[in-house]
Figure 1: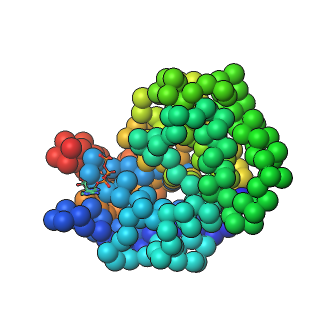
Figure 2 (figure 1 turned 30 degrees about the vertical axis):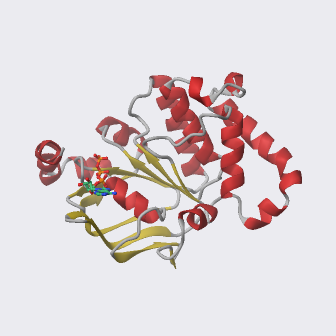
Length: 253
Ligand SMILES: Nc1ncnc2c1ncn2[C@@H]1O[C@H](COP(=O)(O)OP(=O)(O)OP(=O)(O)O)[C@@H](O)[C@H]1O
């Protein structure tokens, strides 16, 4: 899953009716780095992740991964080249067990060659799921129905599902919201492991302390644009960022 190069979001714009959600949004993420996407409500963070992962088509601009354009690819094609994500609303299969949720995630994102070897791939899939559940502290609950889990456990399952796809690039949508310290630790550990393996990790977060703890780089967005990109120390010391965050959070909520 190691990847070189960068993910480049270049001058991306998107409007929904009269709402300009992205307005010339430009930033880069690098392999082996964790990038925090932060900004007031409505700044365009989710929309830019939706554009990168193919769920929303940009009106203008491009997204390039290692120099290759992603803009004409479907969400499934983008997932199959190794771009994974979690969703704010988790999108789990409630009628399946924890283990089944993980196995299905691996199968759905598998490149065609791996899907062709379905029977023989079942063993490695099970091994991978067992290892992921173990790391996330979910081994004992592997056969539980996902609908019976707590919110924090469900959120860990959503992390487990994206880990099963062995992503080169992964976006985590608000990992810290609604979880306990135990789940937060698991997210932190997995993010560190992904970084060590050379993946690019993007974290949409409102919690500045979490961003400081996990991220090498911060992209501060407001009104569909990137106001500042840099280290957490640089970005959070910038007076325009501070006034946008405090004032903008209320104004755009
Ligand atoms: N599918 C959509 N249809 C209409 N408007 C949308 C849609 N998706 C996003 N928007 C609007 O685009 C703007 C940017 O939204 P987006 O969700 O990207 O912001 P955000 O920074 O992720 O906000 P939050 O922190 O509240 O999740 C908002 O005004 C939002 O209402």
